[in-house]
Image: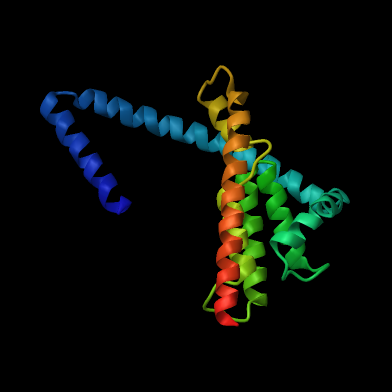
Length: 196
């Protein structure tokens, strides 16, 4: 649907600019926007590289193991079917840790790796497993303590106080995570009862 709406908006904007005699303003805004996009992309690429590097260092040290031990009781409740001490569990935990730290861009490859591992363990290849559903919900809710990407975006756009959004982000992501987890657990339980 969006691939239809955006071209329509662009065409209407160009036609309106020609009719109203604002073609010069349109040209200027196109070049300014292109310049802003490049600057913004470079700042986000730098941020992604930084945090991906930090996650890679953390993976090769004992820090991830320590964080995994802290998260282990929660993971057992959320993912009861995950096997102990395997790479799938570690990838799921790393994805959750990256999301908690607000590293959405670094969490994406970790989430894809975890989902690939979960799919390999999935007995029904054409349907999502319970663990896969929970991982999708957690990634969508994206519980964040430090919303790094949002802070970087606000800083790059010249916000006077980019960190003012931290408390509202906590409330929003905690509420989203709780509702998502509860709904997923209810659906999983109902589905499992119907199967048995």
